[in-house]
Image 1 (tube, rainbow, N blue to C red):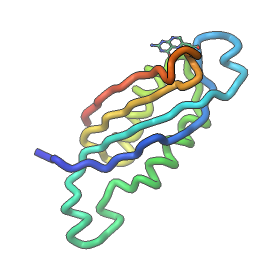
Image 2 (image 1 turned 90 degrees about the horizontal axis):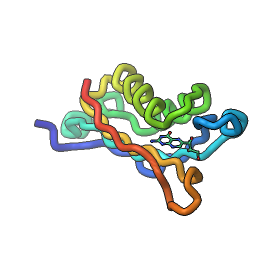
Image 3 (image 1 turned 90 degrees about the vertical axis):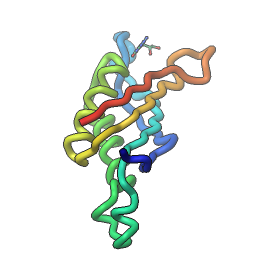
Image 4 (image 1 turned 180 degrees about the vertical axis):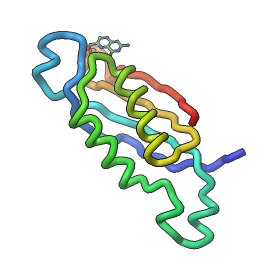
Length: 118
Ligand SMILES: Nc1nc2c(c(=O)[nH]1)N=C([C@H](O)[C@@H](O)CO)CN2
């Protein structure tokens, strides 16, 4: 059982996302919190970046995905992005919280949280 994680908190990205026609013409803010299970003793043993989940590379992959893909629902974006990250970075388990801060003006944020396993 893996007890360690690598996390990314408050990652700001922009995407064309939303169900309404006006939303398909604008960029909107999205904010991600990500937790990925990993045995952190392995990279720590050799002080070796190649044995970690590289949070910089994963952050850049998330930003690029949001920049280049378009969906209506944040559920769809979260699902497809988790699938890609699991495949590309060989993740075992990922928990993703995706907030769309501007969507409901009366709320600080709305969003979804999913947990997916390879
Ligand atoms: N569960 C969801 N509800 C809503 C979504 C969504 O992606 N998931 N999207 C919208 C609109 O696009 C909204 O963000 C416009 O402000 C409405 N509800």
